[in-house]
Image 1 (cartoon, helix red, strand yellow):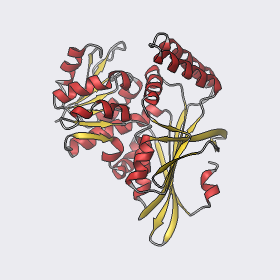
Image 2 (image 1 turned 90 degrees about the vertical axis):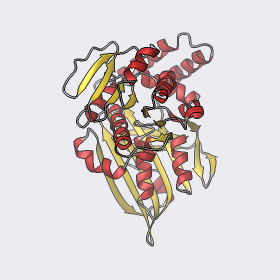
Image 3 (image 1 turned 180 degrees about the vertical axis):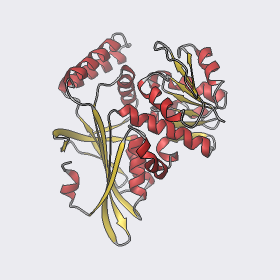
Length: 358
C-alpha cells in the first residue's frame, strides 16, 4: 500500500491531516519541537525542515508528500523541488500563485497540487460544485469568516502570499474584466454583524474564467484597525529586510487571543451562485462551518492525496479544487469535522444577492 508522508505532522493542519489519512493509508509524519509517539498506522519521526538532507531522507520513505511544515512561502519551494527530484507527488495546503510561479521551470517533471487548504482550497471546490450544478452558471460570490486565533505560520503565509499576488483588493470580476468596487457588504452571522469588501482572489478569478461567468465576487472581512496596522507594520519590516517582523506577528496573535477571549471559535464559508437549469434561473447556496479552519484545510489536503492515489495525474501543476471530487467529499461529510448545507431558491434580485442575513 502507498505510504503518505506528512511534514509538520504535529502542527494544526498537519495533525488533522494525519488523522484523516491514517484511517486508509500507512502514514509517516514528522515533528520538530513537539514530540509525538507513533501509533497504529502512523510513524512519527523528528525532522528539521531547515535541514535539506533530513527532508530528502524523509521524503524518500514516502510515495506522496504533504507539506504542512510551517509557512509554505518560506519552505514550499524547497520541499517541492526535493519531491520533484524523487518523483514523489507534492501536496501543499497553501502554495497559491506564488509557488506556481516558482515551480514553473520543473512543472513537467512532477505532480504538484497547490492551494489544498481552507481558503484557497475548500472555497474553490465549493465554487466549482455550485457552478457545475447549473446547466449554464452565470454568477458566483463567496465569503469567509474565521473567528479563531491563527498560528504563526498562518499569519506569515497570509502576509507573504498577499505580497506575492494572492488577489486584487476592492475588485470583482465582470464579464472578463476586473472592476473596482469599494462598497461594503454587511452580513449577520451567528448573531454578530460583519463588514466585508471585495477582494478578487486568484482562485475566484480562475473559477470565473473557467466557467465563463458574467460576474464573480469574493468578499474578505476586515480584521479591525488594530490588527490591520500591525500587519502593515510587518509588511514594511519585511520589505526593509525582515528584521523584527516575527515579533509583530506575535503581537497580532495576542490581539486575536484578547479579542476572542470567552467567545466560541468557529470558521464559516458561504458560496452563492446563480445560473440556468433547464428554463429556470435558480440560486444555489453552500454553507460550511467548522470549529476551526485547520479542520477544513486538513480535509482538503487529505482528499487531494486520496484523489492522487486513486487516479494518478500527468505531471503538472494543479489546484486541489480541480482534482477533488466534490460529490465524494459531500458523501463523506458525516465522518469529517465540518458541516455542509446546500440549498436552492428561485432567482433573487441583484440587491438581495449583494446583501443578506444568515
